[in-house]
Amino acid sequence: MELQERVQDGYDQEAIDKLNRIIPYTDTKIYWRDGYGWTSRFWESLLAMGWKMVPSPLDPDYVLALDEHGVECLAAGPGRIPLLRLLTNYFIGGG
Image (cartoon, rainbow, N blue to C red; front, side):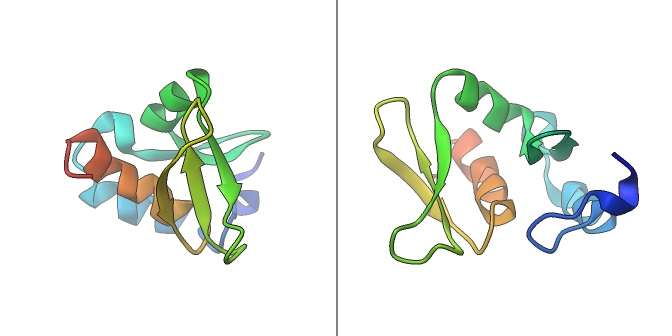
């Protein structure tokens, strides 16, 4: 996919590059995966363990992260980028 087509939740590659400058860990930096959208290595690890992102039933603009048992662990929004940013705190144990 062309760089100019990589827009999701209002974020393009330039906006993501700006965010990544302040994300200190390689595993939580945000990147584009074709067929999926914006993600991070840390989220991909959680996804492989059975985690998933779903729209919040209270506000569909917000996203919930459910663990492999379907338990809500994180919520952020609007869109998935705030949740991916929140994962940086989760990654370092700041929750």
